Amino acid sequence: MQLFYREAGEGRPIVILHGLFGSSDNWMSVTKELALHYKAYVLDARNHGQSPHAVIHNYTEMAADLKEFIDFHKIENPILIGHSMGGKTIMRFAAEYPSVAEKLIVVDISPRFYGRHHEAILTGLAAIDLVTLKTRGEADAILSNYVGDVGVRMFLLKSLYRNSEGEFDWRINLSVLSDQIDNIGEALPETAKINIPTLFIRGSESGYIEAKDTALIQQHFSNVRIETVDGASHFVHAEKPQEVIDLIEKFIEN
Image (cartoon, rainbow, N blue to C red):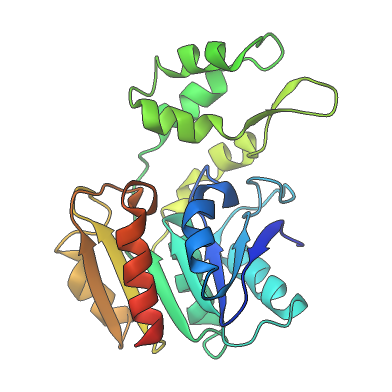
């Protein structure tokens, strides 16, 4: 699958993958800073952003999409950065293609299994009738009945756009993501052993990487560091961009 991407800068190659319900737009402020020193590629995952829709959504396929992108663009020794779903994707990629990436940077996701916890979001998005929808404000009002956090609603509604016929539509493939949401929580296979230097970045206020995850991370990753960004929740890069940039650049250069 040919993924949509944005690129900026020159130098050592970095490939960035966003999380569930997101797009490359979510990483552009961080990318602009990284592009001062590196060549950055920011991708839209399948069924997200401006990348094609597909009937299958799982980590095997997303890792294969990433491999196809790297091969097509002839990117050598990339540093892979992934947030949440993107973080799980680069873990799976490193397990299946161990000689491709130079380093991994996983943002606020553990290799463990995550149970369903997006039902309110999926129900809220499905409640928005695109046929009768007149304004983005109306969409936000509907979604607010299911998702209380204004910031999360703004993030989700970035995927709402007007198509070529002037009608509202979703950039995300909502039906496939809803049907295959369990795949997003899938754990890294127990047998996966990754020797690539890896940095995990967690938000202190996020529950996605907890103290109990340290042993599991070390079980899968032989050369790993875990750093905590104080005061940040799951969207670490959006809430504390400079801290995340500093951690990324320090890890790349050391």
